[in-house]
Image (tube, helix red, strand yellow):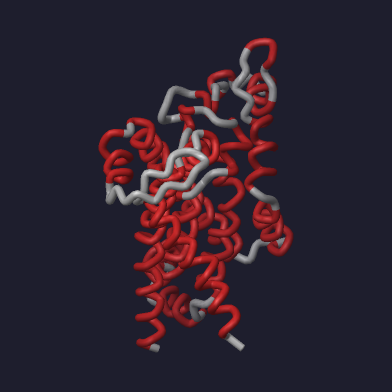
Length: 285
């Protein structure tokens, strides 16, 4: 019963990865396939001679730091708030999780209006709200800010959508901690802040690791959110967009495949250690 699934995965996952690796080591440019072996020339060109790819790496780093830091912090704060068993907890939990129900395309379209960079008579979205509230110092051009800081503003819609996921993971981790541990800390004279700092947060390390791994691989291969938010702008370019334009617009299939392999390796750097850690934890249990 497992064999059909294993065969399909072998063909459509690992088979296509092997095919992409083969193309990335060829000179295939244009619509006519060419498989002349070129070794690691395409990878060397991207890493050492391609200025656009280096800009893409910088943009991805800025986006990842802003996205991971913001979503993890906000998700943890929301989880702590709900863990306090506030009234209407179910309502707020659903509200925080609702953004996950939409795709990055929908998020990008909605936030494209909210973060409209136009100023003057065409001001709208959040800038118009700031203007009406007398908070003119908050008015800015959002993702049109000078590179690479515009990428930090691109992380805001992603943070809005995925912080609920981080909240759910952290809240599940908190609810799995025995209440006896909290009561014992309170009996020893610990305040509520100390209970969270000394007892709960250290026990949330597996949950935090899961959040970082899952959100990290999303940030590394981000594509649709940026396309929906701002289109193809070199200032907001990332490796996934570069791979698309290189492969399907310029017909440089070898270079596009090389970018795809580098993306796969970057994601593997995050995912493989997590899988190793999870397997070791299962073995210890």
